[in-house]
Structure formats: structure tokens, C-alpha cells
Length: 539
Image (cartoon, helix red, strand yellow):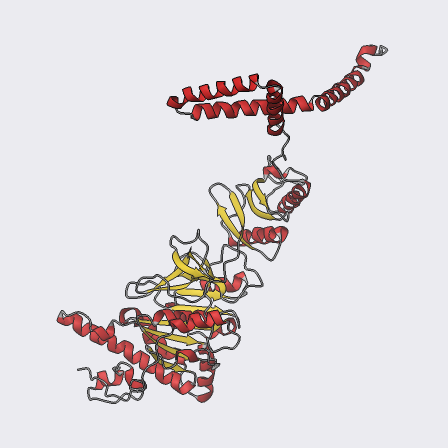
């Protein structure tokens, strides 16, 4: 059977419809151009009328009568003056034209460049969030990025500042390795050199990436508003802690979120370990802790590097010793171990007798060791015991005796730390540039942010016990005797230093008298080699 041709009206109907649409669209555009002034005036009159209704609704009822009388009087005056109605109409039309003018349209979506960036990021995530047997994939090559990204924000330079990713339920978001791959990819595609925070919501299969602002470095050493037994290690993000303290930031005073480390008899993290690279600010943190500890405690400083970073503390009230040499460090740490035992014995005696603990056992004692690994190498070469071995008693029993140990060392010497130090320093801090693996090795958990290669001194991470990993910026506490220190920071540190001891009080006799282990066991009195005073016999 031969095919019959379609009727003419059916074969040419689509072309006619297309031409009709083009004619109608052109006519509408021309009419809009011609009637644009009228449309603007009508829009303005509508807005003026709406504003008048709102003003009338906000007018109290007892004032509406006088308002109507005043309006009627104005209309009568305008109607009676020459050319009054014409001027009134011109004024109203001008106000309506100004009110109804076209304004800059509000941006409601990404532009072409931002859409291209989102599409590229979407395509890069396809190999991680897609499988061949997925019937309805969220991520697929050539797909629409709207399905994978529910919200996004760009800065003025066109770079991402926040992004919410919707990933499929089969993705292994509970495995750290899988998370790390996604975080590294998002960081690389969104721009390096910035610090990103990643919040994983396993229940809803959402990942929120946020660009974090840099922590301020303008906060200097000062008296912080803290309770006894609290030490401010530095400052962190506002949404990471529930507390703020007033601080002086330059010439202004503001509230800043601190990282507060609590010590004392009820502390679960009585000792601190700080690790960093050279020039990362570990000594700055140690100096800041020493200045805060001297408010109501005694401090012993052992410096292994021997650079004299703690020379400003020597001879100050409350500073029992500042040692840089091996012999002095060993003698000081041995005395600290005996002092810890003396406090334990005295407190135990008072407790058994039903009396409060003696006052000389309540004053906190701080042992600050900077670079103990250097002293360990010197001790091994000289055939002497490692200084870390003398810390076993303060580390194990320091919480009950009011003794706190703070150690600082570098990454290349972490392996030389003894097992006792690793076990009892539950408060940790990492300063300076470090990889995620290095941070995890020290803190025991990976940070939820991406470390940047270039950071100012004192910038890093802190973790107190089993708590979360927090970003940290140590307050500027430089050596006041350093010529490179600014005058403002030098004066801030000098104002916090205690007064120097008088000549009559100088010397090791100001330290408490310790109890030696040998004396406690043997019974007869002996003289302590460090203090030079008779030790109290236990018996």
C-alpha cells in the first residue's frame, strides 16, 4: 500500500508555530520598551500606596482625626494656589518614578565561573561516591551538581567558603582513610593555603566543609580571669568551647574563647606534653604557663637547650631554680622527686590524724622541662641517669601532691620519651607546621581541620585527655631580654614577672625541705645534698 503524503497544514504547522512565537516575543519586548515609563510609575504608585497604608495602620486611633484634618487642609491649599494641582501631579509622578525604578537584581545563584567550579568538583567526587550497580546515583559523570551539593557559599574572589555535600549511604564514612581521601580532594579543589573544617553527619549522609578564619595573633601575655588550678593554654574557635574570658587585644578589650587546662587533685589531665618544630612557639607556651603558675605557686625550670630563654625568671619570687646544665638539672629533679614524696607523707600523716593537710603541701609546684631529650643525650654520654627517670614519682603521684609536670620537645625526639612520660601526660599540644599523621601520633586523634604548611609561631592544636582536638593560638609571650622583641610585648611580660628576691632570701634554702627515700627507710637523719638542710626522718 503506497504512503500518502501528509496534509500541508500538518507538515508546515511546526514552522508556523515557531514564527508565531517569535513574533509574539518581539511584540512583547517592544511593548515593554514603549510602556517602560508607565510600568515604572505604576510600580512606584503601588509602593507609595503600600507605604501609606502601613503608615496609617501604625498611627494611633486618637491621632487619626488630626492627621486627616491636616491632610485635607494641605489638599485645599494646593487646590487654591495657582498651578497647584499640576505641581502636585508632577511631584507625585516623580516620586512614583523614583520609587519604582529598576534596582540591581539580587544574586540568587552561582554565576558561570562558580557553576564551572562546582561542576568540576562534582566530577572529581564521582569515582568516590558512585558504583556501577547504583540505580539512582547521586554522582555520575556528566550529571548535575545540584544533586550532590545542597548548599554552597563563595567569597568575593570566587572561592568556596562553605559547601554541603550529600553523599550516598553506601559510602564508608566510618573509616578514617575514606574520610581523609575526600577531605584531601575537597581541599585541593577548593584552594590550598586555607584551613578547612569538615563536619561529617553519618546519620544524614551529609558533609559540611567550612573555611575557617585564622585565629588572631594579637593577644599578648596578660592576667587572665581564671579560677585557681586553671591555666589558659591559648585561644581557639568560638564554637569549640562554651566559655569566654575578657582579654586585651591591642587597645581594645573583647571576649575570647580560651583553651583552659585544669590541674589539681581532681584533674584528669594533671601533666602536659608540648611537641613542635624549632621556632614553632613551644618555649613561648612554656613561658606563658610559668607566668600564670607564679600567681599562686612555685616553679622549677629545667632548660635542656641552654639558650637562656628563661633568664628573665631567674631570681624571681616563687622561682625555685632555673637550670641549664646537666648536673644542676639532675640535682633539681632529684629534689623535686623527694619533695613529691615529702608532700605525700605529710598529707598522709595529717589525714590519719584527722587534721587538714599542712599548708606547705597545698601550694602548687610546677616542674617545667624544655628539651629534656638534649639532657638525656648528655647524661648517656656521661654515664649518668636520664633526667626523665627522675620524673617517675612526680608524674605518677604529682596530682595528689600538688605537683604538675610540663614538658616540651621536638618531633624528632618524641621517640626518646619514656613510657612513663607518654602514659601520664594526658594533656597534649602540637605547635607549628605538622602533618595529620604527626598530629595524630601525638594527640591520639586526627584534627577535624586541614593543617596548613605556613603558620605563625604559637599556632597548633591541643587535646585535653579524651576531649576533642581544638585549634590553638598561644598568647604572645616572648623573652623580654631578646632584642627582637617589640616594646609592647616586652613590657607585657615584664609586668607579669614577680619581684626579685632579696639578697637574704636568695639561694636554695628558700625551697621546702624534702624527705629522701633512703632516710625514710633507714631511719637516721641525713643531709640533703641539694638543699643543704637536714632531711626529716620517717619513722
